[in-house]
Every structure is written in structure tokens, then in C-alpha cells.
Image (cartoon, rainbow, N blue to C red; front, top):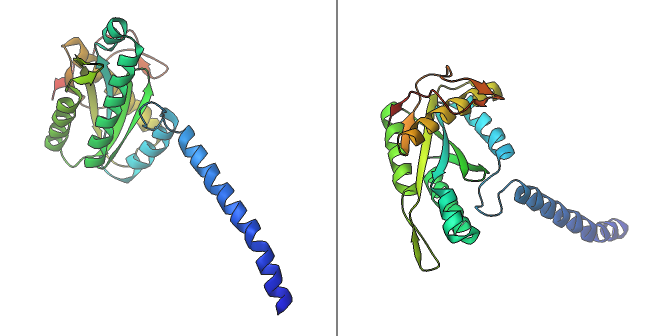
Length: 214
């Protein structure tokens, strides 16, 4: 019995070490799947989580592009641009949490999200709330930076896999550009059939989106 206890006691530090190592590895993997500036998940992580969400229940996919971001970078420097991106990340995180969703940064000033949605009326309300949040000015270095955003969204039924997510992102992308062509705000796509031509699943030349304003 004493030999068994001795063996168990000797193995405890090793087990604890492996447990700590596994925890550190999980944290590193999770950190690698998050954008360091905004704290949002990256495109790959979003693809996995959004695909799972789309197979479970009725959802909506969103694509967001900031307005006037380049002008802010050019006029006030990259630190101001980073402040805008961080603020956008915080706002998207709070909005996604309230709406049982997930938000991601795809790169630059482009973001995406997926949420559950029960009706078109609810989706329109969620879009309006998102737009109000993203339109709030950002304060940085004693300046008030005017920020805008163009958001495209498309609702979908359950049981859509990776191919469905690609089609939804394309339609949300077209609707987002339609919003941008009309001065920003939100546009809601109707159906999955693409309006314009596409290259690698994205709009070709950003032309031809004719959606309905939310």
C-alpha cells in the first residue's frame, strides 16, 4: 500500500505539470484565433463557429465595413485608426453578446457577425441597433473622430453548412456595398441568389447590388 501511495505522490507533480502545460497551450491557441487589436475572433475561427450556428437554427449573417476609415488614418495617423478599430471591436462584442451571436474581424476595417434571429422585424431592429452603436464618435487624443459604417445582412434558415456560409457572406457583402453606395447605414439582402458577378466568392468590382434598406 505504501508503495502505491508513493507512486501516486511521485506522479502528482508530473500530472500537475502536464495540466499546466495543456492550459497554456489552450490559451495560446485561443489567443492565436483572436485579433490582438480588437479582441474579436479571426476569420478562421468565425468560419467554424458560424457554420455550427447555421446548422442549429434560424440565423443572420452580417458584413460590416467602416466608412471614412482611410480618411481618419490619413488625417490623424494610425494610432487614431487603431483607436477606431478597438472601439468598433468593443461595440461589436457588446452587440453580439446581447443578441446571442459572434463577431469577428476579417482584416483591415472589415468585420463580420452571425446571430440568431426569429423574424425579419427582429433582424431589422438588430440592424438598427448595430448601426446606432457603430455611428457613435470615437474620442482619441483630444479629438472627436466621426465614424460611420456600412452593414449588409442576410437571413437564413437552419441546416446550412460551409457552402451556405460562403453564399451568405457573398450576399451580405453585396448588401453592404449597396449600403455604402447610398451613404452608409444598413441594407438587408433578400434571398441567396447573387446580384453581381463574383470572384472567389466575393463581389466582382462591387457593382450591381440592389437590396432593400433596413
